[in-house]
Image 1 (cartoon, helix red, strand yellow):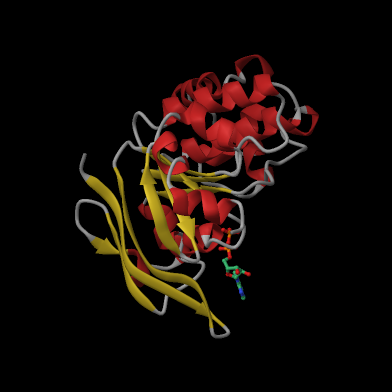
Image 2 (cartoon, protein in one colour):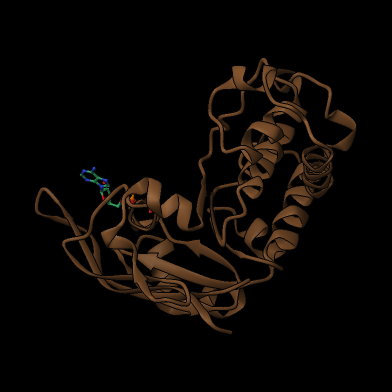
Length: 246
Ligand code: ADP
């Protein structure tokens, strides 16, 4: 599998505290990867580095076929280069329909009033329908997004990110607060999405990670502690000790 993202020797210090400590690992194209680790392991900081929100003190973050450094790019440039990030709290426009939210995302537009002025060509409508199918919200396209359930809002936001065709999708605890059925559906959306792009899921819930059925990277104190299948990493004594706080 060819490499999409290479993090190499990255360290970040906050007020003298090393949150990320000589972190190195790679993500392949069209790979699903789960990142786990106890609180404070550095998972959020890792995502902040990749999206350009936090700048490391040292190390390299190399992206794509042309091996460009993400560290030389602004947050907006990184997003344009193909890094999408989904936070836990959805940021859909609650007063707009599901259709319009997807349309705005396709147009890369953050002004909800713009939809009033778009000329909706057949290709836009088709793209919105394709996205809605991917996230299982076809029947909900005319509904106001504010009326959706928690799970449906999360899927809509994933759809809005997919509209921007990221090569890498970073997702923070996508199944938090969901019913078992919603978690199942979230799994299929992400697994499907990872067929054509890299998807990195930061997750606490091991049952959810198991369903993703992917390589797992365990972070601890800002470094990779273990990597491999979920069964492999959870049988690692160091990982067990860290999780049990020994
Ligand atoms: P995780 O997401 O795995 O819980 P974080 O990346 O949020 O871990 O945090 C890693 C460590 O860095 C934690 O000890 C946290 O307190 C610290 N940290 C994160 N961001 C900051 C910051 N802006 N200032 C100071 N310390 C921070």
